[in-house]
Image 1 (cartoon, rainbow, N blue to C red):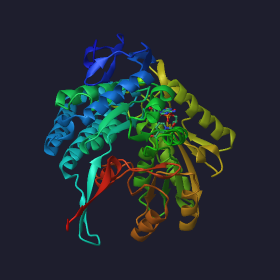
Image 2: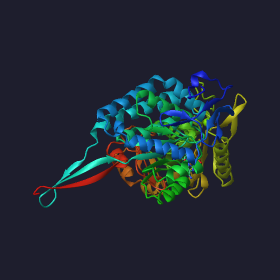
Image 3: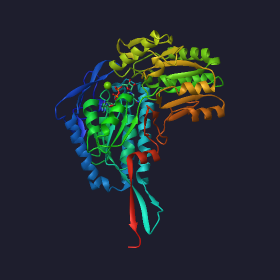
Image 4: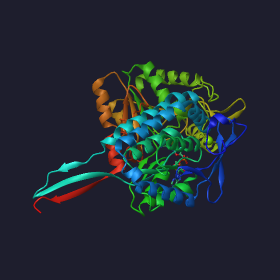
Length: 496
Ligand code: NAI
Ligand code: MG
């Protein structure tokens, strides 16, 4: 793997070496910097990654601008754009084992999840937006006077996509597929912890036949490469997923060039269990809701609100499930709890577990840092009960497998507690009462509400948040059109 990122050719003993993907070719970072991406399950270096600096971002934006202006992209038959996206979906599908392995080794997530959930979702997303490419259409608008007025829907130009480390390839697809379908070109900055699958994705896009420069991939750090992308006058919009703190900076920095931003940020999503729910299902759903993806999920149902009368049974059930899912080698197909993405993230998670203990919550399961085969960054699935809404484990995003269980009295108390958060990303409701389910769905401040299920996603269903979880939506049909195109109103005099 001298050039690309083909993980099939490398064992952990032999770190990969990657370069930047700009203008349809591999190139070195101008300043010659590199950084390491580690395999969090082993602590070993997985790759020496060429580090994009501001000058490389300039180069990538230039390539994307040139590609945007080029008739081969701008005047491409929309059905051809559609075919390219579909072709890319087929390449991702035929390389799914390799990509899932690479994702698992870079991120620490179970191979089971990468292969069975992330990869199929990437394929579906590409196919969904392949279907959008030839449906980007405007309107004819009735106006006073002898005029024809119509609205053209045009691509924005160069889209800067900045993505996090929890679902590296899925997040790339969520942003790249709709942006390209609408006729934009993209500069993608993956997270420094997990840059590898995005690089391979860029290479596969070229193989699918996308013209050079339509998709560029520049791994680097947030404060250098990410910030340069946000500030760049040649970037027309920023689509960001990451922490609320960085989201605020992105919005501030983007104001200098007045580029639109969409921000999909953190959460502390409530998962509300009523006494009339199927308790076994609710326990299983809540467990999956908070422990899936090691809890490194922006929509993780990390505040579990449980009606008083079933509280103790629920806690016993959740603690039992937590104890049944030990952390394991992510490559083992039976593993359901993988390695925490980085040492720094593990320290954050352990800090919150410590805070929960100190603030007086009851530890019902987990709480320990562990190793697997004597190595790696792992923490047990952790359950706290007796959590007060004012505790930090009830208010702050932990981004780890840590559940905070909070009791409630009735529907009004459940709504008040669910909305007692600066975040508003997602929520779950467990009840057999259909009326109550819909009342809760309407009352909770969230971009997504799941009823008697959790963590469902589909490319057709818009995803994003409110309050400090950000604004703008990924996915969806109309939402994608609105996000990645702009409207131009054209007036034509009919009496001239
Ligand atoms: P982060 O927000 O720093 O990283 C996300 C992306 O933003 C990365 O690509 C990073 O390089 C980039 N970035 C960082 N600083 C930037 C800047 N000044 N300008 C432009 N781009 C920048 O997230 P981090 O530090 O890795 O994780 C910290 C916490 O953030 C987590 O513990 C979790 O609570 C939250 N988080 C939430 C995510 C979500 O999906 N909503 C994803 C990742 C983290
Ligand atoms: Mg890594």
